[in-house]
Image 1 (cartoon, one colour):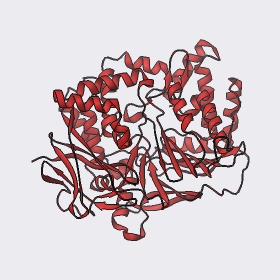
Image 2 (cartoon, rainbow, N blue to C red; image 1 turned 60 degrees about the horizontal axis):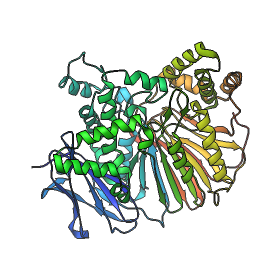
Image 3 (cartoon, helix red, strand yellow; image 1 turned 135 degrees about the horizontal axis):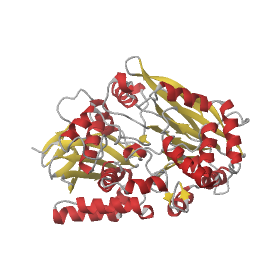
Image 4 (cartoon, rainbow, N blue to C red; image 1 turned 30 degrees about the vertical axis):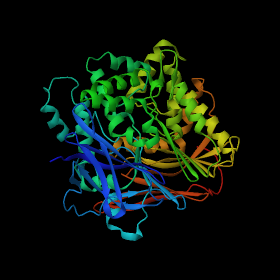
Length: 550
């Protein structure tokens, strides 16, 4: 009998369509069914590296539909798997007449004990939805903004799997090596916790990668890339990481229309149908996507009523050459700029890396980029590059030209120069393992511009790093680093901002709610045995005023 290896996952949804993603243990016909509602949609699996996947696309649904479903493989019901104690999985389409809620977070270590990583915010979130009844407000979208898996910080379960495949001295040590090992990482992250598995089956989920989905400091600089590609094991590692991300995460971010027109998806399906396995085609695509970033797009945009969500790839699409450095390459920035437009109530820009950092960190990163770029000579550049990699100085501030370009676009939108100004423009980010809210104070705009950070879902900072970041967050810490940046001839920032809420260092999940022209955000953390408790709440629109930046 065919069995599910992973899934089902409810991925991209619209007002009328939905996508279900699954991995099975053999080739088969997968169907998503509910006889009472007349639901019966199917897809044949495709195969890559001896793994079998299906994306079942469902059309003709009603807005705001809540349809329980089962998954059938070759005529046998494979989901639900017996009496799980959880409610039936549902297809949940969007309703343009209702408020929009987007829950998000990043940086989730799984599996692991409470002593290691604390209570899992994602598990606690699932348990509340499962037990809360009609009183609980469900999210319309779950957005995972990076580090869904950790390919270079292994659990005991992952080490045991690797020991069954290769010797203890075979490179890379204490890291995954190839596509097969990545697939097991995804299984550990999304299969073994029944609460999370149920959550992913019934809440529409979108994702984007960050560095640990591939490797710590992924694409931090040109020097980093040169060093990695000099390693004999790196080709299998990067092609396995990008290829598995494309299948396990990126395919579900696309709408059915986007998948239908995607040449890579067509090539993989064709290779699977004609040769039995599309692994070679997938590897070729993944290697090219790393070496020629302009040839692949991982960013995406979705419009829902009065809200536009732009999810930006701030990792694979970087411009890194011996002459130029950019957070995004030219083609990617042109794409982003084209979608940064007004005419919506709320513009959300999701980037795994925060755009607005605490001032001390922002100025430290702009200074470091200038030094690494040679402003203080060759010796300074060499030291600056070592510091960049050692201290993870690689956020938007560390690509100062990119920071300024995006600031100009966002301010133009907020001033109504690209159509009617939104009520709010919000950056949604993770990565840094604490949560906060920052608000732009200058220049003046019609839109409220904010940075909302929620991190981690489950991977709290150790005490010394928590102390250091708490100090960096303080207003007093900004001045010395601002002076240092000026000594390195860094231009004055085109925007100013103030940290208004946080920092919070607990495992957490945040929910942004848009209602007409109003927007607010709520952070929650699992406490008292894993029960979610409000950690912070703020109104994004209607902020009472602007004040001095830090």
